Amino acid sequence: MNEVLNTIANRYSCRSFTNQAVENDKVEAIALAALQAPSAVNKQPWQIIVIKDKALIEEMDAYGMTQLDEASYQRIMGRGGKLFYNAPLMLVIAKNGNKDLDCGIVTQNVTLAATSLGLGNVVCALAGFAFNNDSYKKRIIPEGYEFAISVLIGYPTHPNGKAHEVDLNKITYIG
Image (cartoon, rainbow, N blue to C red; front, side, top):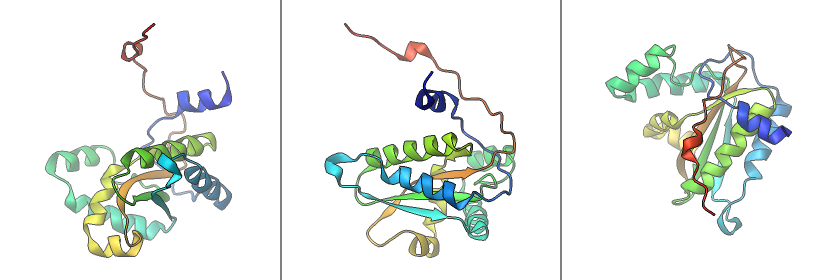
């Protein structure tokens, strides 16, 4: 199997990270992969915010936990009690306008780039709860943009995570 297909097949949602910081060259490679995503009419309606400040991530984590409904809170508590799973790196993708599809493509680039570099990652929409706080929103999201999605990245606590089982019944061939 070729390298790209192998990366796709082995990527999984990592929900437990070590405290080890991600090296700058890997952070830069992931951010560049984000920018290389295609977009409709090449508008690139995003801004990529790279958060390496562990204290800020932990502060946003604590605030976000207070915003969860009871079911979500219990689910996170069952997974270690951290909304951001102790990740040392967060990429926030902010969008300009109703551009969820374009930001989804950016997100896929980020997750596959991180996986190819030996890093665990998980797409985290729950980071949006932190941006209910105007202080975080003004501090992190550029004027004219809004939170779209985030990806948490780091070295996995359990590096042998397994990708989900594929359901071949989800494919329909016509012709």
